Length: 116
Image (tube, rainbow, N blue to C red; front, side, top):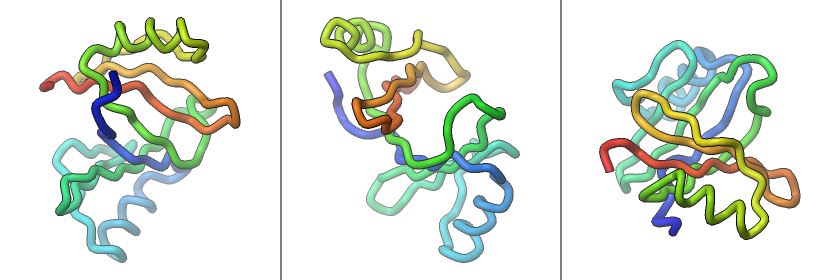
């Protein structure tokens, strides 16, 4: 059901500072979807890396992975049946997401891009 990784991401406390670091120090170019809360950087090999500043308490700081699936609602239903604890699927302008943690507390997202 998981077809790949859509995004490797850090949630951060200061998005502007982190965007400037990855852009100005490491030379990554943010894509056009970025805003004051974060940005995504498409790498030459097709991998996407992002930084995101969530609302306080919304999501912990640290590294996360977004697993690509063709149908987020079906995937969440299947993974819950196998014992995964996942949020209900939320819709944004560009995707559908469900947030979860593994048994050691590492965050991950079940992610369906709308253009897929």
